[in-house]
Length: 256
Image (tube, rainbow, N blue to C red):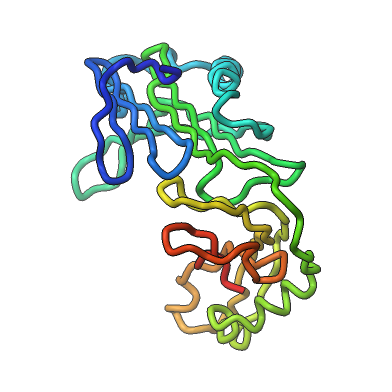
């Protein structure tokens, strides 16, 4: 197998699971997605020092090679990856943490299709490498797609913002507070890999934050201020009659 596990598959509700002495792989039933974990992955960094973690350059090179080996599963274009560390924090129970140290590095990928980025939780990959010198964890969330026809009319960004202001999820918030928009980006919304999805939905991904007055009540000052929402970038009409067993209707993630 491409994830390095040659073992019989055991069926569960959401995925097939393959395990051997070294690793386990979950193959999602609803999509062309998989997730691998080495059983010996040292999440606490107890077996060796941080000097054995691959450098950023080496981690990206290894991850790119791994992703390239999955091209027959996913056909989209990977966007430039980002890196994030996994840290182990030591300290006294109930007290402040004494120190933290990096025990692994994660290389994170998003993808694009027809030059539009794939948004949401259902189209991404992550490769994790720690002190073992191997790929300790990896996942690819993906679903095979094919262009069938073009039927929808694009909704301009301004109209999408009007819809956001009128949305029952956001209207009361906007009436009470100022909203600062940080980014509006169009793309295809991909649902989680456990959900069957026959249609990729064109959406605007809107990032912003709420502006709270200095004399606002404490609960408002302490509340999360940044938000990320999805607004339809097309007429909210599915391209074909929705079926009960698929997500072919506009999903709840799209709030307007």
